[in-house]
Length: 349
Image (cartoon, rainbow, N blue to C red; front, side, top):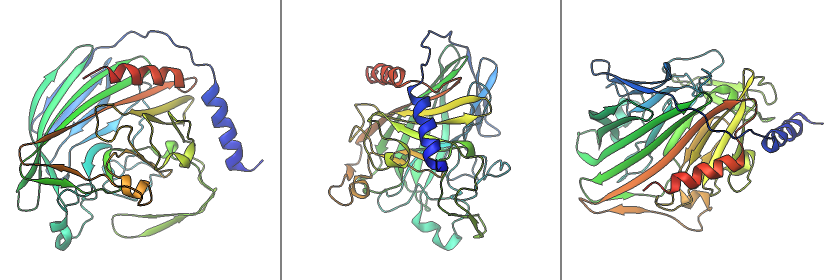
């Protein structure tokens, strides 16, 4: 049996395996601020879950790194904390973030230190100017304010985001609500790269028989021969039953990446919310490790059959809600449980 077919067969067995459903005790969440470092650490059950970082050296605020409850790091280390065998493509893919490729013609998604100074005028920055709230408890709350601005520091959008963090012995949950208020007339022009994204650890990439090219921050190109990657073992599954690379460009209310990290099955699931524009979202889910929910990329995802341009008049706002679940255990989290999580999340207004 060819390697890829064998891998898909094993993945299907994992998907259909019995997953014990039981109530797990919620662990205490502690939020620790460091204004000097421009960082907020999130601890769950005394373990570091993630850090919200917003230094001036970054073009956007991110959650980095993101841990599963068992300690596995589900986000790629490069470029902030490179790990052995990390792919070095797309230096703007850092941890978990929220941006978009085309806001009044400015690219907020692809901006990074790798963009030459003479081209920076075409890119936008998201600068966090204040932390609004931090609260400890069985749900840890972190909220912040940021400005989406051009190179002249003209503000296009004001962002207010609220995170709710929670967790148990084998699960971590991030509920995110982001409100974008227009400081002037705004058009989100339909584009591929958006909106909520996470760059996955190497182990959660999908194995492939095709050659892959990766470019580092210095422009050096590395070719990885297909079938030689012994680390990648991930796979996608959507609520509509799409598997692997076939998830890309399809709509679904949730999408999951799962794979083995050490002895455990670790998964990352993003759940869309019915109040989000263009629900259910399209999935910009790539085998090389980019995992993104993008409701505003309809034109490319439908091959030009339709488009979704979102327009805001000055003073108007739009809200986006997402739930992310990081789960670990003997088997991957079951479809039944994810559907129940999606239904529960949908009831939150």
